[in-house]
Amino acid sequence: MTDTTLRNGNSATPALDAARQNEWRLLQVYLYYRLLLAVSLISAYMFTDTKPGSTSTQDQQLYFATIVTYLALAILSLLTARLRTGRLGIQVFIIIVTDILAIGILEYANGQTNSNLTILLVVTVAAGSILVEGKLANFFAAIATLVVLYKQGYSAFVKGSFSQDDLVQSALIGIACFATSIFAQQIAKRLRESTELAGKQAKDLANLEELNHHIIQRMRTGILVVDGNDEILLINDACWRLLGMPRMSEHIKLENVSPELEQQLIQWRENNFVRTRPFRSSLSGPEVQANFTSLDTGEGNNALIFIDDNTRMAQQAQQLKLASLGGLTASIAHEIRNPLGAISHAAQLLQESTQLNKGDARLAEIIHQHCVRMNKVIENVLQLSRRKPVQPELLNMQEWLLHFIEEFKSTQNEPVEIEFKITRPDLSFRIDPSQIGQVLTNLFQNGLRYSEKSTGKRFLRVVADFSIQTEQPFVDIIDRGPGVSDDMRDKIFEPFYTSEKSGTGLGLYIARELCEANQARLDYIPTKTGSCFRITFSHPARIVTI
Image (cartoon, rainbow, N blue to C red; front, side, top):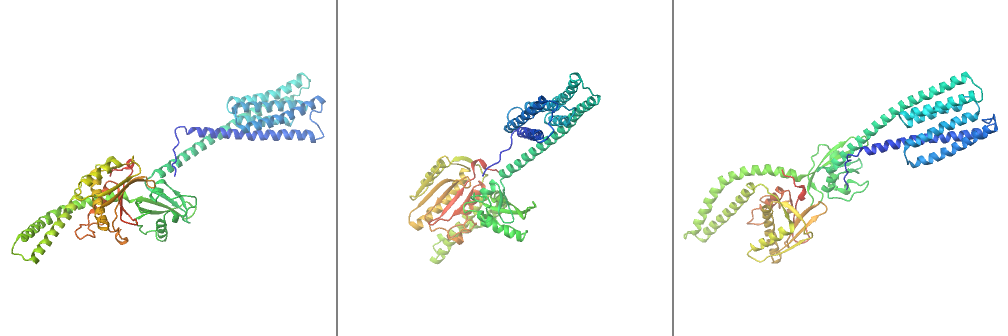
């Protein structure tokens, strides 16, 4: 996946380059016209009976030499212009002046007065006025006028053939050259303004499109667009990561990326009011929620899918839940704890009585045991509701875990074996040390207890690593116990659910709540032997405080 980079302050440079490229294309059009004109003049000379410049052999030779030279220059200038090197203005000046002089020489060698060749001067002046602007365009018109008047003056003073009608006609051609220059400049100016405006609008549109693409790629909400055949047309970086970083290719089907998401899309197309359910794209991936909407693009039944990470919503819900739980536990502590203490004290007094038989003493012991258990439940709930605000710190994972494992071992009455493995010593995570310590203590105690039941040894394996898929560090706590059955996996994190007679069913629930409060995630990962509980931490640079 790649991200689009916004254009910087030099975005005017592509627009200028586009304008210059357009001017080069206009020049090439005129150069093709010159080539066609040269070929036409040679063809007319070679295949017509009446030769131009028939007044003398010298004029015919001059005429033929001029059109051949003009053809060679037309080919050379066309090849040079295709390279698009050098200054455009200089090349235009040389080409237009060459054309004006060539037409003047052909007009002289032709021997006629104001022949059809003179009209070509107007075309040349018009082309020069379009290709350049300002005084240089007027200069072309002036040169063309001087060429026409020079021929009339030469005929009058050298050959003595002065004609008033020819002079008037030459003057009209000069006026036409200036008029054409002015008119062509106005048209060229409007064309340049239109081109500049179109270029500016295209640049703004490209910047806007690039900005939109950049925003879409940087959004934390996943964006996915599919067509009527469920082929993925667009997927942003957040969606790609939320769906488990699948392998992408052209024309890939949605079912190959997320079968669960495809099933929800099918259900939504059948009933747009269906309520989607959260799902996980992978066992260790985050729980996500999909929302669908139609995308009316005129190209088919496209659908726009929003993929949201339920982590933040769960954290917000947790804040509301804890606030309600705090009021509830305060009432529980007031209404239940005092009577429970009285019952427990009375049961202890009964146990000390010498007048009780064995059956009554056993009943008093049961009362006391259950009072202790109920008191433990109340303490756990109070601890959850009165928890201090999260105070995250940036910690080195290897150093902190090694220190925690040594401290945990020192608190155990029996020897324990904890194997620790980390692949990247530079891993770091941001979390509240006291709260993550409480979570790990609970997971360590559970893992050691179940390992001892199955193998007779208090063994635990701790693995710290970095997930390339989600770009998040994680810690696995692996035991050698019997594992968790399939029908219990969805229940082990529910409050008050326990498989132990003396358990409260709040250990894993509190551990998950503490993880969510620190923007981490606690999951059960199925393994072939034993159990694996994984704590996935948020990226240290992406922590968001609620």
